[in-house]
Image (cartoon, rainbow, N blue to C red; front, side, top):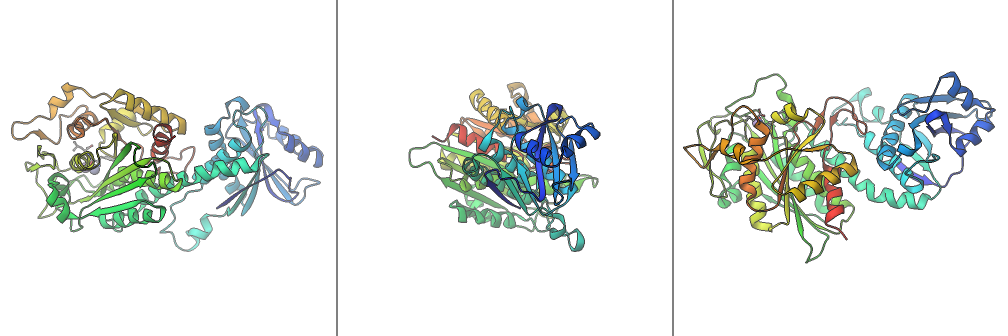
Amino acid sequence: MKISFAEPKLPTSGLLVFLVGADARLGASAKVVDKATKGALTRALKAASFAGKKGESLSVLAPQGREKATILLIGAGNAKDVDALRAQEIGAQIYKAIGAVSGSAATIIAEMTGAKARGGELAASIAIGARLRSYKYDKYLTGSKGRSASSKLSRLQIMVKGATDARRRYAVLAPVADGVDMARDLVSEPSNVKSPKWMAAQCRKLTKLGVKVEVLGEAQMRKLGMNALLAVGQGSVRESQLVVMRWNGGGKDAKTVSFIGKGVTFDTGGISIKPAGGMEDMIWDMGGAGTVIGAMRAIAGRKAKANVIGVVGLVENMPDGNAQRPGDIVTSMSGQTIEVINTDAEGRLVLADALWYTQKRFKPDVMIDFATLTGAIMVALGREYGGLYANDDGLAERIVSSSKEVGEKVWRMPLDDAFDRQINTPRADMKNVGPRWGGSITAAQFLQRYANDVPWAHMDIAGVAWSDKEQPLMARGATGFAVRTLDQFVRDHYEK
Ligand code: BES
Ligand code: MN
Ligand code: ZN
């Protein structure tokens, strides 16, 4: 979909979209059209009892005086509530409503009296909302279900006073949407294609944007002593990989922020095998890596003035003659030993080595890891909130505040020595599972032992990396959760 901005100059034909505020309030341009059509818009609003509430939409076809036009009226709610985030949702709402009316091109008049977001900000926010909502994973649909059939709307023009400002703002937002879409593509890919090496190849594509990409194979990881990560992949015929992505936009003296992702390209559970029902969901067990890669793409794409490192541990967890067994004891890169009680608690083994490697090699200012780590976080927070853990209150607050700015829901969870003790075992330094209760917390406690003294946060995104229902800014499926939060976090705390 091609998105462009122009100064207002009302077309007399085609699909025209107007925002309607609460109490069916029309903007100035809509009033002009209403007049030209002898009140067709106000009549239609009345006949449909259209109140301008958010979510409402109404199409007026070929009104007298504008016979070649279709007017789409979009309920935008109370003007004073329309800030940049609401405007994004309105953009998404418009994209969806256009799909119902059909048409390959549309013009949106970004005008709303009394809105908090105005001019270029309103227009760019509407544009990015439409752009995010337009994502569809149709790579494997053929024939009439295929790509050409599903993406009807190919050109979207947004008219606004101050089109130059809108263009400038959109140019910063679009790379972030590219990052979200990339994460969604990666997470959606089926695991017959999505091997650790395939994932590494996708990371390498970021080289074009100026990201330095390094890929470590099993031999290199063995030399480094990453036996916890390697143990997870040893039952797979596909080679495990660790990818390091570096964006140096901040210059020599800038601090380094690091993101670490769990990239289990398929999680069968290993020898502690999962039940068959729903196992197909485990294609998205690399969601944490997807977030990190998508964030790197966003940050490099907009040429952020910051130094950012992304590290993803890529493995496939399979049952096999060579797979690790419950009861095995592995020595992680940190030197700490782990008794593997359950081979399905594999994500923490991958992250243990990735976290240790990241801090030893890069001495980052902070480490934030992302993982579809536990079913337990879904019990705690449902499918609405990502669970945040941190060994540093300031860092947790900064992440939560950035997440709010972009409208992603994050909830802080506790860490506590009482939980830490629950992963002690007589046979090794720790075991990889705790007792039944608080499973997401004991998983986080495990990771904390590998964060060492570095300010660190962990986000358990098992509940939010994939959505079975439609979201305000996206259709169901992979969400690209936290890509926008990370981009915002870098913008808020590591630039300027
Ligand atoms: N990848 C799963 C967690 C998960 C579950 C992600 C559902 C997305 C949806 C993780 O590797 C896992 O299997 N965790 C176990 C841990 C348990 C064995 C301690 C779990 O949550 O059941
Ligand atoms: Mn598992
Ligand atoms: Zn897993």
